[in-house]
Length: 554
Image (cartoon, rainbow, N blue to C red; front, side, top):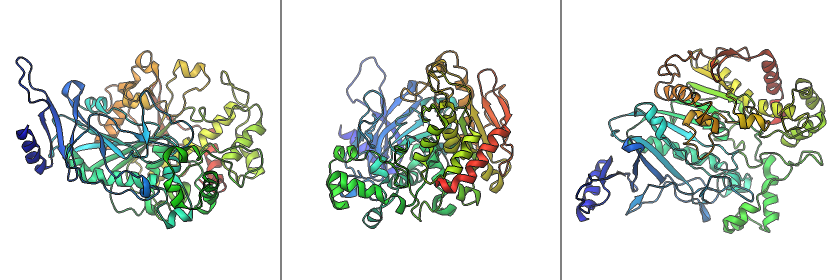
């Protein structure tokens, strides 16, 4: 055992991932088994091998100190020194969000001590490999860690062992996005985003130890993760000099209302009243469960009585530093990082979120609850462009209208705007857009169409997404997995989805439009994947949402 510890120290001094005997006992007939070990300058982690030994995984490594106690609502701090070899063979706790019950698959655990990173690497990668790095930022509406613990083995194998895959947790809900001048004075705003920034710096500092290239980091995120990609693109008004990534993949980018600190001051006051606290120090002394249960949403104060709760309550705010302005204003004025972009949405982005409305008036009430500064004439304009539509199974008459309106304003038009801006300010050949239109029988029968982030299982493989991959991707839609995965891994490797696309698949043309024109996108569809032009009806709707963006605080 002493020899094993000495070997860890020797190779650790070199700062590399190495394979060490998992068991020093003699075995008569079996070959020795080896577990990979990586020594960072603050801890040594022992991982494991998966995928028949082709992939090494290091799970649950700290990238920050636990944000608990007095560190609640403060910027994350670099991790403390660890003297003993740390087990990195299991996923660690996810970040707890707000409300009465966190989402998650079987066995998922949640706590405030949750700032962990997972790295998947080819077994043969060394410090000299300089492989492209795929960073995945999970979604969850900034209220939950909704896509934690994805397994990166299949995407690594799809490339022949030529990329690394990394994912992580960040603070959410009341723990990540409590907004008040009191928080700014004795802490930090948008600490969930600050967690992401510290993590990206961790990648820059340490990913070469796993065989990755810190100069070739591609950040992808779905939903709020796609919104996070938007925030990192626009960080510090687009003047971010840290060069934390080389390209972005916002998948169904989430652009909800984006309010100022003063607009959200009521949130802090209400939390004090609910918890019978009188200061942020008192809030920091509350136990996790009490604080989480006290953080249920309330209507925005500008709304009308009876409008109901907003769908999303704990959100990033404009802080004048990391987040300097609304998303539309920043992208339309070119205040964002100049990198290639692959962005897209599903056909029916809003079906998981739209109110099951029976009338147009109910659709307007739903929208006003989420965007309380919309005036009646603006709501009437929305109703004109989203009249009664073709019905969805198991839903009321105006549900399709509510779903289409919410899906466009929150996701689809955000992606189109990003593609426009990158084409205009970065280059004609730097933006690619898609629409995922692969019908799953279960979703269709339940009246959700091709819903929000339905593409996640096709991108990563349906067995690697903690139960979030649709069943049909293992059966009738199985051929969509290698096709979709090849485009995405090609972009990660070469910043171009076409370089290593699946043989026989169509070339993915660039978006092409610069200011709301008819962009070109790839339609993912069973037996019918092809390029298409954005319909004029969709362009008119996105033009309207852009016009209303200021009133919606987007």
